[in-house]
Amino acid sequence: MARLVIVSNRVALPSEKAGRAGGLAVALREALQRRGGLWFGWSGETVSGTPGEPELLQSGKITYATIDLNAEDYHHFYIGFANGVLWPLFHYRVGLSEFRRPAFEGYLRVNEIFARRLAPLLQPEDLVWVHDYHFVPLASELRRLGVTNRIGFFLHIPFPAPEVLLTLPVHQRLVRDLCAYDLVGFQTEDDVRALQRYIVDEAGGTLTGDGGAACFGASTRIGAFGIGIDTESFARLAEKAVQRPETTRLTDSLAGRELVIGVDRLDYSKGITQRLEAFRELLSRWPEHRSRVTFMQIAPVSRGEIAQYRALRREIEGLAGRINGKFSEFDWTPVRYLNKSFSRSVLAGFFRVSRVALVTPVRDGMNLVAKEYVAAQDPKDPGALVLSRFAGAARELKDALIVNPYDVDAVAAALHAGLVMPREERVQRWRRMMEVLERNTVGVWRERFLGALEQAAPG
Ligand code: F6P
Image 1 (cartoon, rainbow, N blue to C red):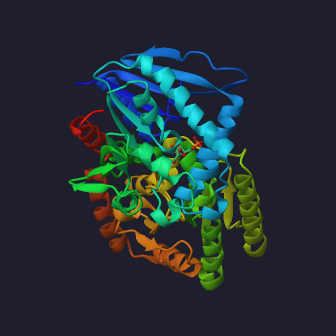
Image 2: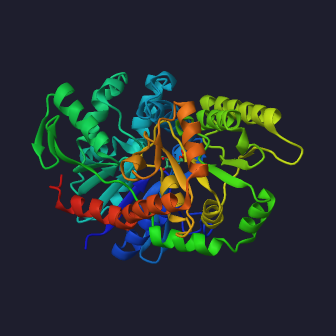
Image 3: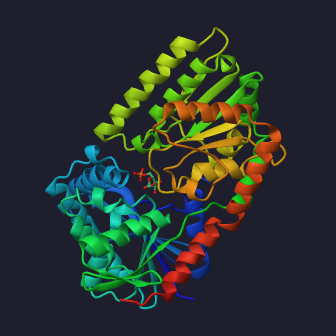
């Protein structure tokens, strides 16, 4: 079996506190441990001069190699281009995307540095698996250095329709770089079609059937590989978590009220503002829920260096405060808003005791919270999932209450429907969703991608 090399911006080092590593990190680590391999990425540190050689750490059959980045390069790469341009654009927020050439040049520079530091660590048969929008140009840079290994790319976030992508001044360069990979994996067929449409309509390329594409003088394969979770272990975690002190404290604090839960990074793609408005609408339109339902939104602060994220934080604080000001009683606060993160096992317990989960991103590659919420439910008395049609997960979880997150009235109505849904219907919907999650686990996703990469023609 070929050795596996994973490249991602953040690396889940073995020192990461037990229980904090997400399901994806665990699944990737598992593959590295089985095949033997290397996990290469950013150390999380910036330096003022030129960064040195990668720091290597051996743990079992896995070598972790992390590099520092020059502070200015990091700023252009991470804040300026990856999260200032690609993130908003790929989430269809064209107006938030602020393209500047110095940022793009910094993005390319960091990809070049990554390639130069990674290339000497590669062995001839290694399978290289690059993750996410931070590293679109990495395969091109590696090829320039003479690397002929099979290189695959998986995009965790959505890939935009050509009409949106064309607003990016360097769209052609970006797609040319994508085509330098031997395999490009997306979350959904919609993303696949978006790239295929660009290739045919904008780049004059051809599709060769069975996922093949020829463009910019290269040939690649494109496919949908929707990411899953470790369904069984998350379900077990949730079952046990019911006994955890945090879960007991939470249920005690509710004093018999129903809990509605939202868990997201504090990001404008997650639709938290519209969701709060929908909750306010629920309380206005169905006053019977007042004093009977509590909405807990967990939203750890993310990318706080970026102005739009800070503005969003202020907006949400204002909205949550206004809802509480308007509806609170001396013994009931409708919205609990927490800028905190919790371990997976605490979250699993919180999911299990929630009657409804609101997963209403305005755009999301997949959304694993939706899947984890379903996996965490009590099979005999499961909760209901309200899910945005714009999350990749909606393609699989068809038995959720699917909503348009921009339609505040409709989200409020779906939330009401979830709260009053008879147990029998909840059980039926949950069973069908659980079957999907049991079929497409994170392990299945990983092996499907690696299998396809092994089949792809190298170089
Ligand atoms: O969803 C994309 C993603 O990059 C995830 O891989 C990551 O967990 C999350 O966003 C947080 O991103 P950041 O590394 O910017 O904190």
